Image (cartoon, rainbow, N blue to C red; front, side, top):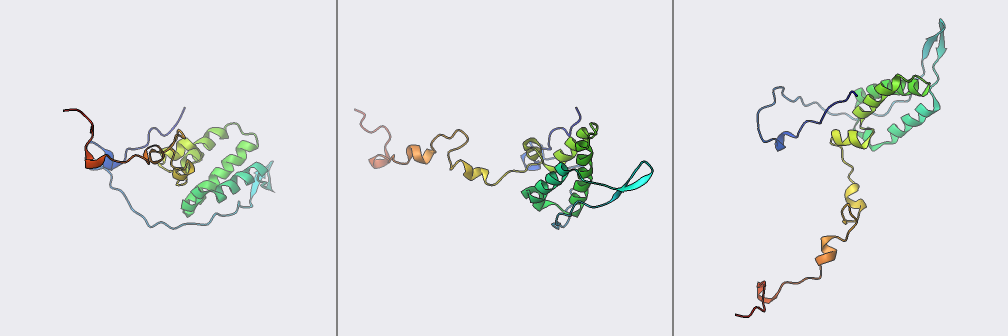
Length: 162
């Protein structure tokens, strides 16, 4: 099965601090608004006919437009996403060969938990969702130990006989 392999390690966490062989390029980020799914014609049986987007693709597109992930899309990202919409439409029109390409493209866009982890995308509300109880739902340390007070004189083990 084709894939991208593991995500690169954060350079600040590497044991060896060798310089990257390829320097990083920084560009100015400009947010772009989501375009509408375009109207266009395709050739079918020698004639140009209006392409009709499957209803499922229209719903999928709206999910992406409403997603917080799209807040970080630039114009080139939306162009890539329009191409992905065509692959999605082919898939929902019965082209079984489109599924593999759709899977790869959606992974590049962060469509799954795994792909977001690979892209190092985290959800900010996750920290507050468990009300500080951690993943297990157990009481927080403050709840467990909040009533404890230190012993007078700060001596641990007070009360030992000498």
